[in-house]
Length: 316
Image 1 (cartoon, rainbow, N blue to C red):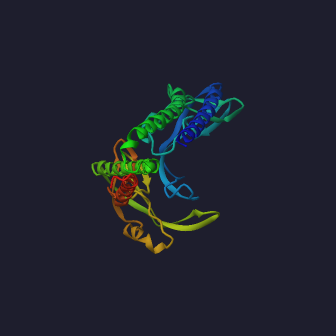
Image 2: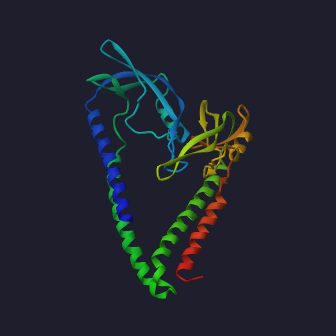
Image 3: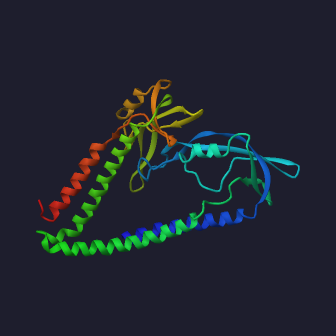
């Protein structure tokens, strides 16, 4: 099962890499022309998120993107475009660096499609070694899964004779793996909150506060509506305005009854001032409360899985 999953992920990565390679290859035939940066700023966008279960159909979150608009001329006609790079940007990534690279008023070389001059980019190549890394990552996933399966299998066979209930070793190993993964997740979230407590603080404002209705798949052909608090705030760093909707780290709480999740929205009234902790290395990443919501639940779940594994093999 693990090997099959690794092969599926590797296949998907390989396909994405191949499609991007084809795109970059096509852009290599585009023609250069002088251009100029007309606008360079931060733009907040709502993007799809899987924060409330992978089956949720309309969950969104706020992320910050570099919004670069440039102008160029082909023949006697002027064009404007906002697609500055062939690289994908999922948000909250290298925003400050990109704005510094393409400041307003800077002269740049633009590469345009001779068949359709309205299509153009400034960066038409990927970072050196990007494609090689992606293919190596795909191969590494499959090889790593195979090594893990055989090494874990050998380890289980070695300890089987020493267990009071060796017949339950397979199920216990699964519970052990799940317990350790949840435990690691808890420590990772706790570490993030501790780091955020040391981040710089800037003044922010609550731009929107209320509840968001989500359609969540809860069974065979059955969708139900759940609610979560939706709080969007903005803050300024180095002359740029950013937006975020992350209140704390950890799980997002949803409920079928609006009243069960409305407390957080009431705590952050629209228009109120707040202190925003932002990552100095990545100002697009911010949080209001430096804590992990639901951390205790991770500890309980981890302890339950680990205890269940020990119980199955007769250690307790």
